[in-house]
Amino acid sequence: KATAQDVIHSLRAKHFRSDHIPSLTVTNLPYLGYNPGTWNDEIHTCDESQKLFVTEEKLKDWMSVAVDFHDRDYELDLMLDFLKGTEGFNRLKLLVEEEKLWYVLLHGGPEQWILDSPHKLQKGTRVLLFAVGVSRASGNLVGIVTEQLCHNYCD
View 1 (cartoon, rainbow, N blue to C red):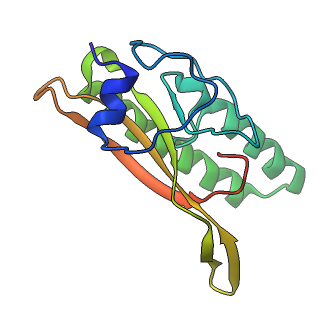
View 2: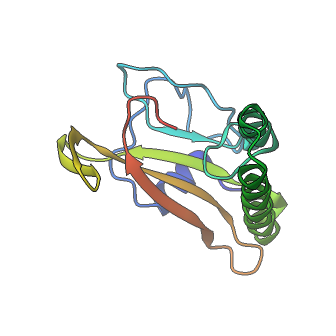
């Protein structure tokens, strides 16, 4: 079984920094929350706390907004996004051993000027977000990766 340390090593993360994870030699790790002002790279196996795929809870939040605005098209778009998101999530889980995914958040290097949107330059760092697991077929790490500007709340 892969440990948190194995996952971090496989991702070639040279500088994983967390003041809140007591041990990386475990095979399951709960989400320990966000702790601003500390070293707060993250790794956990909690599907409910991951931020890469649309969850049923998040959909309910969005749907309440759609209902408030009585926007039927928006409501339908949200349902389609939810179905696409859960399809990708479920397919990825089927590819990996024990259907277990590791969720990893790594902060980038030093602050720099970053184009946050077409007309907004902002000083900050980038974060990489991973959802990975051990492939049933090959034993290699498989999954997805995305990146975003660090907004100081790491979601």
